[in-house]
Length: 205
Image (cartoon, rainbow, N blue to C red; front, side, top):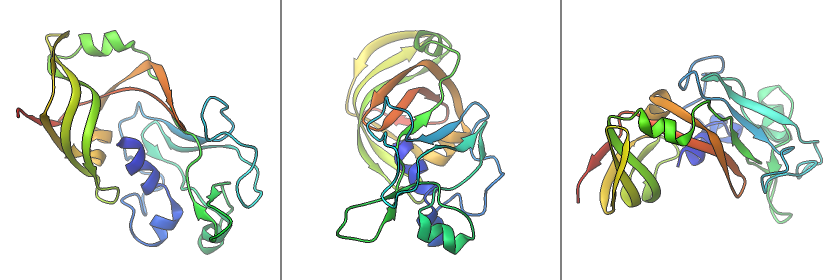
């Protein structure tokens, strides 16, 4: 959910079409200080690893958000020329259509706490392992149902819950990020830690 919205927002094509909430925010704070995000096709752990993009531009690690500050957008040669800059090596797509812009490996740098430590610091909340719902990549609004999760009370994992409604906004979540685990999971082309957010609304089913 977080990846989909951030990937859309750092896409230069979306920025140039005025469909990105990050437009005009280079150098500005868009998330909590602890968040650093890389687009990194050189990381061989992710399925998006490769030597060069569809246009033959060599891949490199692009830090798009550093310590909560937006650093750059992702470009192919077409969008880069429109912006008066260089391609970041993010041209993608099939041979049957013009090159588009896409992320490679979406990598969130780990935090310092263990997953257990993140949970132990929570007064009340929920650990979500499966979510079914919708997210708007432009405005960041999301809503859906927790299909797999556990209640957290006083720093302890409690009973399992399901069919609980959850709603919020991804851009608000980025600013209300309160913890990142040092453990990370590789899920396709994503390499991400466990993330803890404040201010998310839950409603019992």
